Each structure stands twice: as C-alpha cells, then as structure tokens.
Image 1 (cartoon, rainbow, N blue to C red):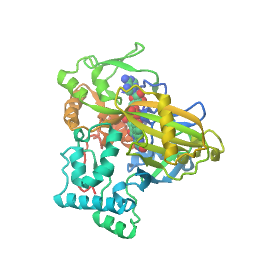
Image 2 (cartoon, protein in one colour):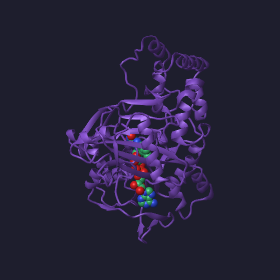
Image 3 (cartoon, rainbow, N blue to C red):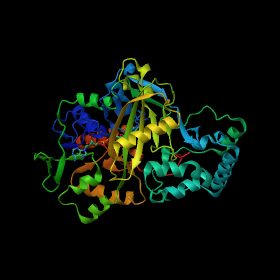
Length: 459
Ligand SMILES: Cc1cc2nc3c(=O)[nH]c(=O)nc-3n(C[C@H](O)[C@H](O)[C@H](O)COP(=O)(O)OP(=O)(O)OC[C@H]3O[C@@H](n4cnc5c(N)ncnc54)[C@H](O)[C@@H]3O)c2cc1C
C-alpha cells in the first residue's frame, strides 16, 4: 500500500496499519518535514510558529487516546478559550451574536429586532446558499454588523457561492430570550459555547510536535522530500519527482483532491471537470515576535473589518511560553496573524509584516515601545477547502470513480469537506481507512452523512 502525504491523516493511517500488524506500506511526503498543515517552524530569531492558528480539541475518543499515548499530561498545556471580535474600535466577546449587549443600544436593538423577525419567518434550509442561510437565521442587521464582513474576509469567496450544508457546529446559534436578558441585565449565563471552549497546546514545539512524535513511532518506510507527480491508475503505479516508480495495491491519498485528479493518467473528462470546480483559499501566516512581555491574557481575536489585513490574530506566546526564544518568556511576546488571499496572489512578504505590525499596534495589542525582533511569513497555498454550492455534486462524481481505481482520498483536502477538516477528523479518517483496507470495517466520519442544518445539532 502507498500513502501519499505525511500530514495528520497519512501519519495516522500508517500508525494504524502498523498497529494492525500490516507492515507492507510506504509513506511518501513531498515536504522535507512531516505534519502537513499541522506542522510548525522555528524562525531565525528562535520563535516557533504554526501554519495558522491551531488549537487541539476533540470529541473523538480515538484522537484523545492518541494524544494521551504521545504526551505526558504535563507536556500538554490546557487553556480556557478567551476570544473577542474587533468591532467599531472596541472588543465584543465571541460568539458575537451572543453578546449584542456589548454594542450600542441602537445597534443591539436593530440586531435583535431583525433576528426576531428572521426567526419568526422560520428556520433556514440547509439546501440554501450561505448568504441566504445567514440572513434567514440571524436577520439582516447581524449579517451586516459581523457575519458578512467576517466570512467574506476569511473565505475570500462570495457568500452566495457557498453552500450552507457544512455549518453544524461551526457557527454559533443566537437565543433571543437569552439576548433580551443580557440586554437588560448584562448577564450572559455561565455556558461557554463551542467545541473549542477548552483547548490544549503542546508545551513545546508547537502543534507540529504532535505529528513529529507520531512519525517517530513509525518503524516503516517513511520518505520525506518525495513528491508524487504522476499516477497510472490502470497500472496501479506512481511516479515521484526524482523518477522513482512504485507499485501499489491500494493508494491512500491525503493531498489536494484536485491535484490528485490532475496527475492521473486516465481520469475521465467529467471527473477532471468536477475537480477543477473545487475552490480553496490561500492564507499568509505572518508571525510577529516582540521584545516585550506577554501581557494580554486572551487566546485569539477576530478582525472582520478593514482595520487589519488579517481575519484572526493569535496570542501565540500565551499558548505556550516555549513559543518564544528565551527561557525567560516574560521578555517576549508573539502574535500569529492569518490573512486570506485570492489564489495566485503575488505576496509582498515584507509589506505584509509591516501592515500586520501596524494593525496590531493600532488595535492596542502591541505597545508602541515594543521592539519587533521577528517578522516571519509562511504562505499556505491550500488553507481552507471552500464549501461551494456545487461542491457535493463534484465530490459525488470524483470519489466513487477514485475508489473504483483502489484510490482512497482522505483528510482535509483529500475529502475537500471543511466540516470534517480538523486534525481530529483527519486522524480518524486515516485510522478508519487503514482498518477498512485491512479488516473490512466501515469508516466512521468519512461515510457519515453530513449533518443537516435544522437538525438537532444546530442550535
Ligand atoms: C489556518 C488553519 C488553521 C487551522 N486550525 C485548526 C485548529 O485549530 N484545530 C484543528 O484541529 N485543525 C485546524 N486546522 C486543520 C488542520 O491543519 C488539518 O486538519 C490537518 O492538517 C489535515 O491533515 P491532513 O493530513 O488531512 O492534510 P495535510 O495536513 O494537508 O497533509 C497533507 C500532506 O500531503 C502532502 N502532499 C500533498 N501532495 C503531495 C504529493 N503530490 N506527493 C507527496 N506528498 C504530498 C503535503 O505536503 C502534506 O504534508 C487548521 C488549518 C489551517 C490551514
């Protein structure tokens, strides 16, 4: 068997094969390091950066078991999320729609009135596009104040071209009676929304430490710096950039699905066409390190407006003191910013660092006197698989054809399903496909029907 990609999904697949006693596999990774989008880098000044703001959280027992296998309890730092949205020059706690009492009375009233009217009209349908779903669920004012600017910024896509079928737990609900009470009393209750209200982070090495540790457990054939460039599905063989030819019985592919189809010898025209319809975002991670102590206690902040180029800034020295260069973390702070770019944009790295630095200072996150000692940029060409209106139809054409060729495309960009695109999903998909191919057991999340909006899952 050949596994393409040593990100969380490919590594978990290899690990599971090993655990099942199946030793006949080769893992090929194009990059010089393992970890994929979950990897971390150390810059010249000694700051550790992730490829965008990663936090570790899961409801999946198998993922938690893997973490417990890889880390002693003290090697994972546990955090309560503290997250805010930049709005009109001040900060509104996240989720925005549950904290309207932080807006001016007039704005809060307008949001509440529109929300009440929208909910009275009935529930939004999953089959609709994302823009219509937002209007039908939250009402026009909330969409205008927050949802439209934020989502346009992060997805770099028109919201009417996106579907609503992925939402489930990813977008927080708004409870009108709780909002009314909060507007009267300022009391928002004690419940904290969302699956990542508590999260973990490796004490050292960034998120990438998880995947380096997992790779270290593999005693099979792991080859980094080996890019697969051509797949002959009829001959069941593939070619790498250095000219190596490998035969396979099954191919588990975890790179981008459109790239996989493009390098296949005999993909039919409709499959090729469907693959070209898949859309993704590119993100530039600009990490800024300062010789100035970490004083902000918040975890991450959202920026829907134009006061900053980034859509999110993560207080990275707060996640783990070891993310900064000195053994005395009191001396340094680190902010990790994420900016979405249209695919193919020529990136002015130095310009982005300057802009991000100015924005962090303007918003009061970095003191004017703080000396910047690092400005590190990582371009992430494939960052978010966009759930467009036509995505599911395209996937319904591509995936069954691939499976008929004994090719199983899994993971974040392998499935192109953002709703199962986190690390715990990727690991579970990797483990599941290994078990299916060795033992014949059913996959859990890949084959599960996507939860529909309007089901009990969407509150
Ligand atoms: C900005 C951002 C923030 C995120 N935040 C979180 C978070 O907070 N929590 C969370 O759980 N998840 C988060 N994620 C998602 C997380 O990064 C992914 O779930 C995870 O990395 C997916 O693993 P994967 O193995 O499916 O894919 P990838 O990590 O993409 O790995 C695929 C691997 O395949 C390799 N590859 C591709 N093509 C080839 C080829 N032709 N030949 C050989 N190798 C190839 C790639 O180099 C890569 O290493 C975030 C992602 C991004 C981009």
